Image: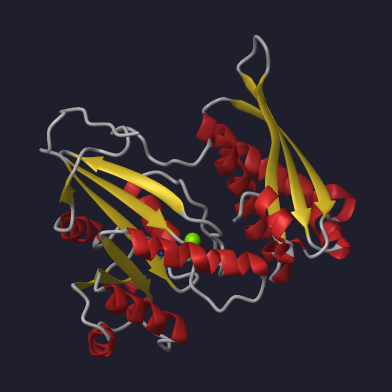
Length: 304
Ligand SMILES: Nc1nc2c(ncn2[C@@H]2O[C@H](COP(=O)(O)OP(=O)(O)OP(=O)(O)O)[C@@H](O)[C@H]2O)c(=O)[nH]1
Ligand SMILES: [Mg+2]
């Protein structure tokens, strides 16, 4: 559907893919640019599993940001879908924002992203995020140099999403690539994700924060029902947490149910503030052996 409030082409829009290695701060950047938390973030890599659209409308310009999963070598069928979400997104946009960190080796995934920009002859801006972590600024110059030799980026901008540093400069630069077009979304819309997807993601974020390494990567969350209680300002949410092994189910539930209680209580508070209404959240835990390698389950969970 096309929304053209002015019915002329005084408006512009830019489709922007946010790409990069896992854990560099892509989803944090999306949230900061849109001004609301619409994508979950965590200190664990491979948090984002699907493409997430975030919309920012400023004056005559609409930016449509597409946050993507971190690019990595796929080890499961699920991660094959995640990598495909990245390549599909890069193919469809006016410009890519490639997010990286100020230090560490430049690996094959970053090299292949730069290669795909060249193959498509597309515009790309490099964002060196987390500069707040840098002790000495001289290393930043070295980093800029290192990337400049590997690819001719349209711009290279150091930023810190946590400190909200450099974000205006990012928008100013992206604006140059906006094309005359009607707005694609209503100007007050922030994301195309349905409420129940955001609620499921909030629960997954709390699981990512509380559980150790391999357990949260094998978890998926589905909202089975979300209904307003008749005659009361209260929403009942029923969620199922799927894990891929029996032993993981025990870890998610915890001793005397303590872990599940903690996760559900944190998630309930955040879903409540997101929906702006009181929420009653019930979570069940089920096992779906090796679901990350089963296409039908990946599809049912909305991850393909
Ligand atoms: N110090 C610092 N940490 C940051 C900054 N931006 C993001 N982070 C942290 O980096 C971690 C990863 O952030 P995410 O936004 O989830 O990263 P991502 O690139 O979306 O990760 P994937 O979805 O796994 O690919 C989180 O712990 C963030 O709080 C920053 O500017 N400075
Ligand atoms: Mg992410």
